[in-house]
Image (tube, rainbow, N blue to C red):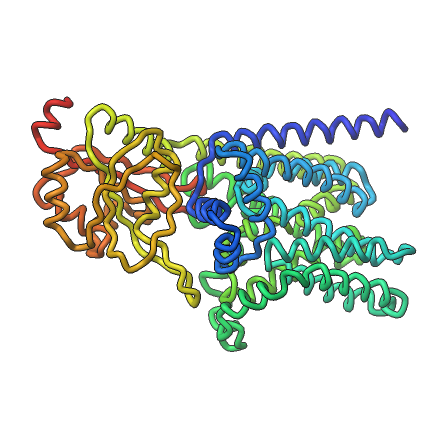
Length: 547
């Protein structure tokens, strides 16, 4: 028996090591996307009061950003910050094994669940993202586990307090935890109503503890929740368009539990199609087995519990799709994805036919491995914003010139936080390995919030949008201009034709000459993100001399 357990331990260790290698590989090749860069900007606020203000105005809980601010005070480079996130994900994998095998009452089941999470492209990707995903996934996992154990009516109140702490911490990292609490209450009243007379005191302690531990954050929560679109909660608004594009996004998110984000929407090519049809086969097979067990009334609690919780979370998040963004991306469901893995593991273990069990298990891991390879392959694609910045710097060092930055001004509805035209400059500065002179297309209406690395870039000119003469004068003085756009949508060529302030400077120069060089680059490792572009304008004699 001891040897048998040791074999399980070795298998789990091996699985976690493989998962760590994949996560470190992602962390090494990843680069900040705009959401991460925004989070880094907040974490690096000069004063603590400014940090608190910007965190509150970001409309998301900020327990994770306190940790990020601490890490940024220690580390000054991206890979270190990502490695810290990977370390949290390693803890998550270990806890996931302990939790899942106890909930499934089966070590094999726990091993299957942790192996799926270790190889999952969704988990690998977001385990290296410098945001709240890892902390929230860990706290949600613990909340679900302690709630599950609470229903077993174990003596004492330790589980109640543990549930309170983990649930409050989950709320402090992501408000979608409210969906989980709602799902737990529905499960409680639907399947354990007869036991409430025995459980009510422990449950009262559990929910009271969650409220008390969340209490220090309540003022921020109330402020941020007021900014939500209350009209979106009206019944007619919720029911309108129920089977619309948003439903397609929800299905895409469910596929993402196995394949990663946005396969249905942005997945093209033969490999993506193979993965989609393979995942469809897998979901169909598992759903058929699940329904068969329901009809035979042989669905054990170990499968019923995660199925009900996951089903309610998906239903509620879609129903409130106009209030939140949960239903549009698998990443928001990341903390709940292990429930699907538990369902799969439980169904596999319940099969009596050995051949069917082996075929389905092989299909699960074959799809995960192929999807993982596909995700890593996409991650390696160049150029990225990092390689583009490096290339432009090398060119400026060798040939001279100035970088001109231009971008749209955007804001968060109802809050009024606006990003100035300095945003692309900050993005460039994060990866620019040289000092360079830059010009900024900015109308001055919004105070810039850029926090550049000191000594990297020097602003020599601020030009108002539409001032074509100033752009041409700058070109005459410097003879070479790199025009840098960090957001050109998914169609860079069409973006440049749009008549709006960010493209005016480009059109002013392209009216008399074509760019001698252009770089279209990825702004995020995610497949669904927009593209950026950099365009070199230079005098003919400069171009001839360079060539």
